[in-house]
Image 1 (cartoon, helix red, strand yellow):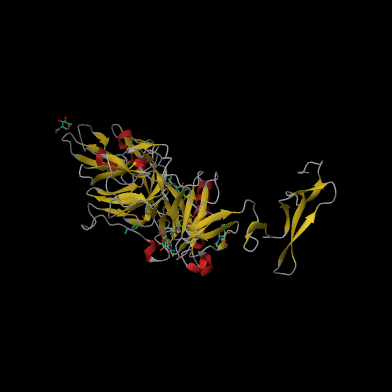
Image 2 (image 1 turned 90 degrees about the vertical axis):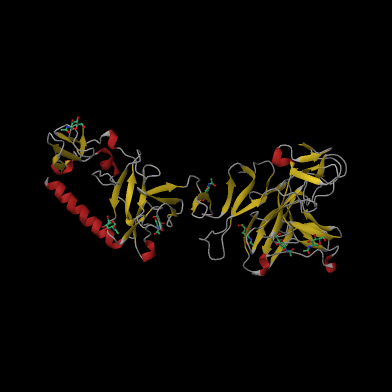
Length: 490
Ligand SMILES: *[C@@H]1O[C@H](CO)[C@@H](O)[C@H](O)[C@H]1NC(C)=O
Ligand SMILES: *[C@@H]1O[C@H](CO)[C@@H](O)[C@H](O)[C@H]1NC(C)=O
Ligand SMILES: *[C@@H]1O[C@H](CO)[C@@H](O)[C@H](O)[C@H]1NC(C)=O
Ligand SMILES: *[C@@H]1O[C@H](CO)[C@@H](O)[C@H](O)[C@H]1NC(C)=O
Ligand SMILES: *[C@@H]1O[C@H](CO)[C@@H](O)[C@H](O)[C@H]1NC(C)=O
Ligand SMILES: *[C@@H]1O[C@H](CO)[C@@H](O)[C@H](O)[C@H]1NC(C)=O
Ligand SMILES: *[C@@H]1O[C@H](CO)[C@@H](O)[C@H](O)[C@H]1NC(C)=O
């Protein structure tokens, strides 16, 4: 008994010390269970019903006279805190009566703390059976923090978010729980009900009364059941912590621009373009049209007399390689050198699918195949190939100089130097090794030679061609000439 008292004192003391310094405190599950919402008590309290001693509720015993009138009552915990629950005919026990295991409307799921919407200094612990155990904060200067599952020191009044469901303006409405918008509260006539958006990155939209995708961090996120689109969340200019943009980008937009629906040429059903079927009336006007891939994603091409197929029409421009795709056989993302906020996905047949940076002031970065906020004008590299002074001129795509392009009469044509560290030499009109950092690098002529890149002044990096000593070959891993008979890894 003595030791317990000392221990409790010690605990109180530690709590007091922690409270004075910490801004974030863990929540401690109370040892004694109390039914959080009180609804359980009401549900099971039927009053006197013929027994002289009975349960008045989940926690209390009542005494009855023969006229079924309650003549007295007491809380089980007042007799023995270890046996706080009333079961059967008014017997206090340590385990809750199953019918008292009332699920709380404040519990969207179990084994977690949830807010008490009306009081920011309180929380409920929801058990695996969705019973709520009310837990008060250490003091009114702490508010419940759902994200941290903790108590956080209140700095401003705005830190305390409360919903008073009792006011008529709040009744029968959904309210987003602003500190953690995945949670929302319905103010029902029996009190608040808490819900949690099911989708991992969804938040509640009060106006639409639905949970919807929301940018919580930057990145690209899949849209369930839609392979052709994804959410792109980009950091905004106000700082890396804010990810306000929520945009849907079409992943696959055919580079061949859809023509305006043209007049029908012949039959009742025909191809309008490579991917679209149109249905015509007898007077040759278009009644309807649909994209093949919307009907069957595996048969996206329109061929012949308006038939959707998995093989594109071999004639015509349906499977035309895009001149902005620099390599054949290698799929990947490439920049549009005429517009820094555009890029394209090139499939293995060099068919290009145009993409654009959705957020304002965002530009494409070839290294990451993603868009970023333009901070200085140099972040945007683009050449106006329509300008006559650029016609038939070659350019290096400076942000990723392995790429180079020609402003041809029919538009830009992209190329890529076949080797890394090679850059198109505008005078020699060929790809040449280029020093990007100090060190030794493989030579395209074979392994008896190598390039040495060295600083000749603090800012000048120069290229030297070297030949390996006789019988040695260059090993790019160790960056030197080694005996050709030894394992290069050694
Ligand atoms: C008391 O309640 C029980 C159960 O409802 C009933 O059977 C009994 O007749 C009641 N007695 C009186 C005096 O009303
Ligand atoms: C909120 O809960 C705390 C701790 O249980 C309590 O002291 C306080 O009075 C409550 N505030 C309101 C407005 O009910
Ligand atoms: C909630 O707790 C988390 C983790 O402890 C913390 O990062 C976050 O800043 C807290 N939220 C607030 C509003 O203080
Ligand atoms: C939710 O966002 C996290 C990163 O914030 C990500 O790892 C996860 O894949 C996303 N989930 C879905 C379903 O988009
Ligand atoms: C670049 O592309 C974006 C998005 O497609 C477009 O809004 C913008 O007008 C284009 N800029 C130029 C210079 O063509
Ligand atoms: C593009 O992304 C790479 C990799 O994150 C980064 O090192 C580079 O600075 C970015 N380019 C620009 C112009 O921001
Ligand atoms: C250049 O001309 C082409 C074809 O006329 C046009 O589609 C494109 O938008 C023009 N680009 C710019 C940047 O003006």
